[in-house]
Image (tube, rainbow over all chains, first blue to last red; front, side, top):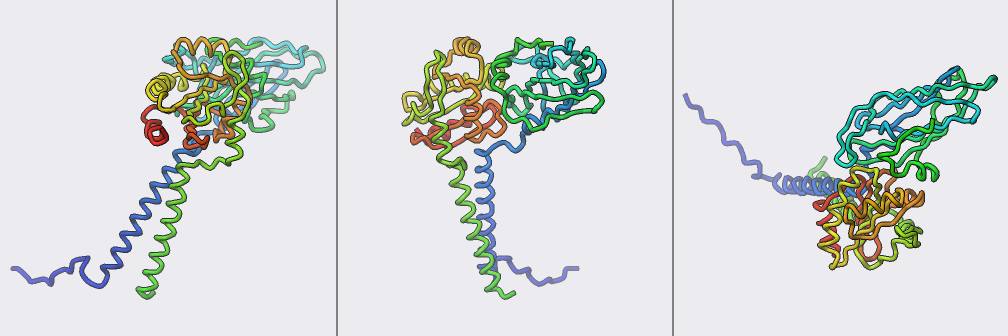
Length: 196
Length: 175
């Protein structure tokens, strides 16, 4: 059985028509605003990228016979295994070669096979402390990149480590590499031995 | 709420959107870098590969693309061949690429030769890192590219690798 239903009024018919038109106009404006906002961000800084200090969070600890250096590398970032430098002071402290973890081999189109380190990186530096020495100064240079396609200038950190004091983090956020560091590390996909 | 009041609110929101949109639209052409800072950036002392002092204001009047890079930066090396091609194609129209390498002079010299770079390369020390920061590269990361118009105003900045497809529309407008 068929029933007669009253016709549904067309949405544009009736007194609401100017209002609907205006609403569409405003919606259009909002769209234009969104596009303009997006365009504005294209020339701004990259909010998706972390500062080096946050991308490569460093801490170090001194025990009786070893310095333990830890990097917490944020997801999407990596450190070059062959670009670390370590300086242990004072000179009376005898430091052996750092023991670095094996990295993941990356076939770089420009540098060939390079080893990169991600996630948690633990580096051990055996030390022989002179009698009575409970504090050392550790200078660390590191260099890394983001998968997003940027590389950070080499970063230098200077830490004072006190035996038994636990993990120490850099006093201030790194944001500028040191002049000496640029001299030292500039260039070096092929350089890379640690000083100790 | 009466219909008239509703209409008024809708129109007010629309106008606000229009004004904000126009503001950001114009901001697309002028990244918010203070004029004085740009002027200072253009006169920052840099050095040529031969060690001669120079600065970016030497190329005033050209459409200038300044690229901060280093030989140890893989994304930097990747984009340079495109810059070489664009310099070749658009140089006669007033386009000038300038590279600022934060790197060892000898390594840069070797790479310039190997890559056939056809535009000036300057050597930056710590001041080049500061220069990049003053132009909006807060992270001090590489590569970083800045487009200036013929009046020395910053038109576009790009942190991370760029390419011809990204640069062409801007450069075509400026040349």
